[in-house]
Amino acid sequence: MRGHRAGGAGCRRSTGDDDSHSSPSGQRPHSGAATETQAEEEGRARDQLAESDHLAGAAGAAHRGRPQQRPHARHDPDHAGDQLPQRGADGRILAFPSENTQWSIVGGAEQRVESNLDLEYQTGLLRDSPFSLTVESLYDRSGTPRFYGIGNNSYQINQTVYIDQQLGAYATLGWNITHAWQLAYTFAAKKVKVLGTTLPGIPPITSRFEGTFGIGTTHELLNRIALVYDTRNDIVIPSSGMEVVAYGGAASRDFDLDSSLFTEAGGDGKFYWSPYPSLVVATHVDLRYEPTTHRVPFWALSSLGGDESDIGGSQTLRGYGTSRFYDRDSFSANLELRQNVYSMDAFSTHIDIQVAPFFDTGRVFGSSSTFPITHLHNVLGVGFRGIAPPSVVGYVDIGKGHEGLAVFTGIGYPF
Image (cartoon, rainbow, N blue to C red; front, side, top):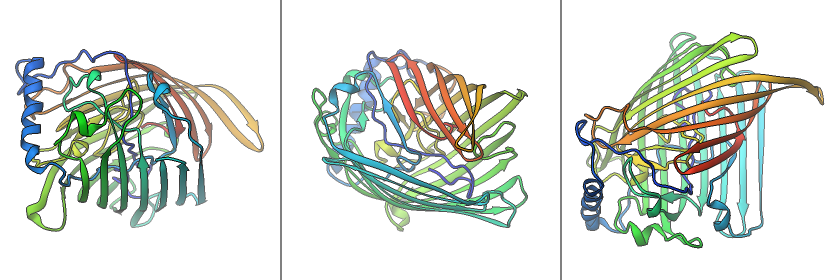
């Protein structure tokens, strides 16, 4: 979810839609010791399905993060064949009244299923005042998200598709203890509906994973506290400093304490170093746990995949679609070398062109005793960035994992 630092360059989430060629090679150790066999993992999935049969059609939990926070597009290797011709339009307004305040309107619709509207306002960006604030309202409906099952070894052959419709309101209030230190409180109220749909050659989620927690209509209330240490020299185009976030939270279906969905605890760090003016070395690491869960929907689990990094949400793995892998806990790490290769002035605007080779790695796992830096999914790729200081970064990122190539475009750095 965006807004772990109020008024900062928050993180984003989009519901995953990915197609791939082959099965991932990583296996998931069980309880931090032996590696799970395929039969053990399938048995684990059957246990979850059996438990969820008691609530088939009941509500689950809403997404922790907000889809389409930065406008972007993706292409995955087998996706071209399942996109039916549709007419539609998308647009965005990005406004920067001052260095300390910004707001945006992003919206679009297509003639069949897709539509979205996202309104966001941020103030206190420079953290020079006692408080910073981020507020947002969001509607998003997508007909192409994918679900492959739960686990680090979920197989591409189990691919399904569903309609995801979300309506939410979010607010983060940050107390700027010093310029670098902030204590932030986030509240999110969301309603999510997951329905089965079909695309050519891809079955609906309701046929292959019937009874899985998360199918149906759900309400979620999330409360999160985060302690942030931020020394970045720029929140949009950083070249030095760091941002480290430690957070914990709890989510429920409503205000009743007995309706708890999950608790969360984690840490996220971004680090920037410029050995010389034209190069920035950017690194990112994220570790998230769900210590307790109560009939938690699949999309309220930790997840990995895509071009975005979201506190409490899907983490960057640019060889796969967003949220390709789900489980209770997750680890991810990323390295980029952002090299300026060309600069020019166009229409009174200075533009820098960057080439950024990158390496992404990560995994999901179901037990807190599992050592996270084993059986990783690895991605190598390259990004091309157009930068118009001080506020705009456009990108094209191309990554290759075990399941083929994935291409992402949009606005903003992945981390």
